[in-house]
Image 1: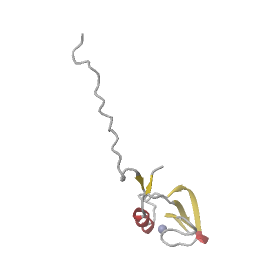
Image 2 (image 1 turned 90 degrees about the horizontal axis):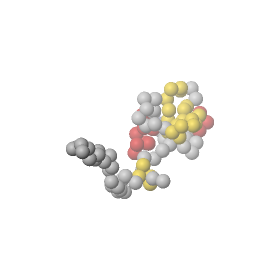
Image 3 (image 1 turned 30 degrees about the vertical axis):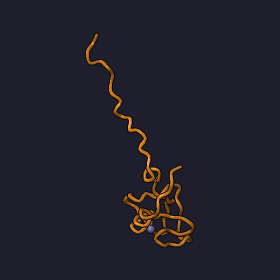
Image 4 (image 1 turned 180 degrees about the horizontal axis):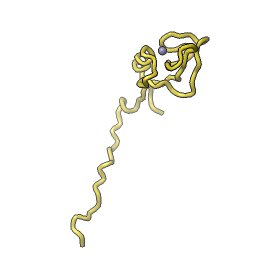
Length: 89
Ligand SMILES: [Zn+2]
């Protein structure tokens, strides 16, 4: 017999700590670029950006707006982070 070989305790299990806060996730917006201003991404949606640029000059990208990305518009970042969260699922 080998003393101390009782197996590794399962410390990775967090248990189910469900709450209304953990059941919600941040709002998401499609990323958009503005014609003539490359390198900056805005949060798009419904023909305009959150910071108020209208659709005619917009190019909607096939990925989500990342508020924390370096290229993100500061106004869109603040507005996207302030947007209400939504339920998961
Ligand atoms: Zn913007």
